[in-house]
Length: 232
Ligand SMILES: Nc1ncnc2c1ncn2[C@@H]1O[C@H](COP(=O)(O)OP(=O)(O)OP(=O)(O)O)[C@@H](O)[C@H]1O
Ligand SMILES: [Mg+2]
Image (cartoon, rainbow, N blue to C red; front, top):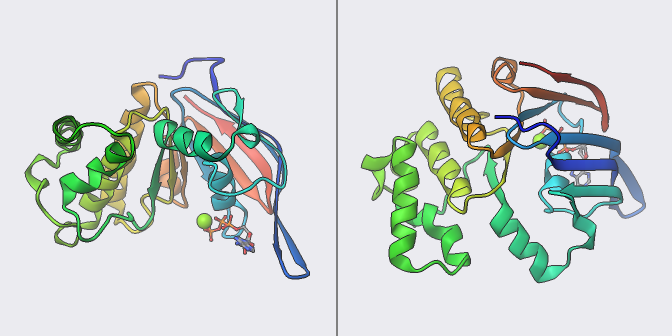
């Protein structure tokens, strides 16, 4: 469900220069993109082209060298400390290649974690986490530990955790990178379905099969946008 003209993410002449000692490495060199509400967008490009860097700047996980990121119209560089943390917790959901589940918490507890940070009472937390896990086909796995799950199941738990706070934007860095091609399709389809409810998903991927599900594909090379394709 792409609602035209509602820009959720905008980057304006975005630069990221990593500095270590005397060395400077420009990982992003003037990236300007716009992503609309409800879009399933892919960021693709060779290793080292700046995909993770771009996703991290959009997700306010790293500092901007130059330019600006606007999330729902708000320039992120103007947000500070608590305001930023609050915004991140309420508005953004993150999914990573390696799932990043907490190994000593069960499935339900992992998904409840973001709700604890939002001060949601315990019974409500259980209910919300369970509902979303059931929607993702994990209703039978609530008490399992992460190491008792397959890779695809672990990633679905991670997606449930990213969704439980009703974010407007999901950022996923190679979410299918550790999965076989069939499971990768399942996980990507789940992310696409998420978009139908008006959530925006931006996914870094190497999997060209999966980009077929995306309605916007941004090709990065050497820190610049080489090409952008909008489809269906
Ligand atoms: N913390 C850092 N310090 C210095 N250089 C960095 C840092 N993080 C990334 N880089 C460099 O910036 C460039 C872009 O890195 P980035 O991780 O964004 O690439 P990527 O497109 O995600 O690659 P991959 O497909 O391998 O994950 C690379 O050349 C990388 O070496
Ligand atoms: Mg990367």
